[in-house]
Image (tube, rainbow, N blue to C red):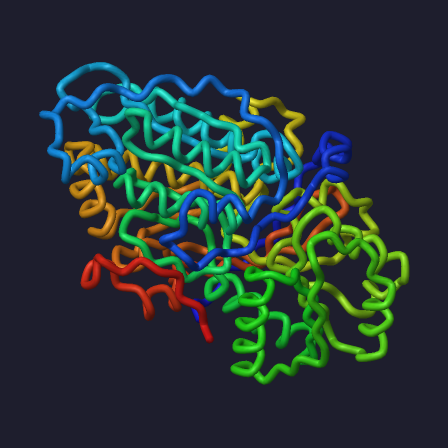
Length: 467
């Protein structure tokens, strides 16, 4: 494991009231993965989590510029995204599909804000290939059907790239669509790991980066006995597998585990079970608004004072802002980015963010910075390649590009299409933020590197799991 840098950073005051009201709407942060990459749109629609109508103006798909295809070529041609015309000074059109409204907008809002800020920043610095970017942004409204129809609509547009998806279900519903259309796709979210797809690039942290840091620290500094509480779907189940793996490697012991459907909001029985098992720490892999009530109930029972919580998800939806200070007290997390990171790059980033969105912005989340990185990595790769051609851009991205992010230097691992990035440990504070106390540089996505080499095997298209 990389040697840590030490930090003692006091969080600035944050506005708590700004996000309290949205948590009553918050649903799951991640949806169930669908491993069937060849499913139809109707099959994908069966994964619907919410249902709201489409209201955006779709616009018209451009007319094809090539000769009409023969009858045997029609189906293949219809599945491909329209080609981007490079012989023009017109703006380059790019796409985004995120949950700007609906129950998941507590995650989506900072990501949408980061998208707009990244596009503005790239344009202010000269754009891409000397051309400005024009954003085609669709609101998926926290609805799986909206993702499916939105992806189809984006494919029909004249786009160079799409950055899209929050839940794992949304990713797996749209990833095949973009792949079949050969429309380059970035997924900028923390997730359960393992996606291996030449057309897809991932900036979010994966379990072998987070848990490689978090579990050894917890065992060494809190104690070896861990109790797992996890969301009962792919993210929680696969992450729990990684908790067991790292606990075994570092002399830990799993003394209990419980998995909860995403709508469970009552944890009294579980809290009693935790007390009876007497672990040294609770490992929380809980997800979404209903599960947030665990922290309030746990604190109300007084258990958090003797059995602290470590988590891979707490704070992604600004739980530390919405909960009262007692309920959010002394929770340990591990993420690549915290707003409090004291670096010149982050100070400049936070200043630009608040200049755009106001000093009273609740908190700049880890998810927002994945989005910022995704857009800049793509723009830098296109400029270096000197073309929008998808294969040329993929080759450039696979060549080992890096970016000076607000959280430090990140580098794209060419074979796995995931980031090598720093991961910091932090503890919640009474100001609605985090105190960062250790940072580990250059943590690789080791499982993805071991299981996925898209340079050697570019036809691979699947999601690998540890078991």
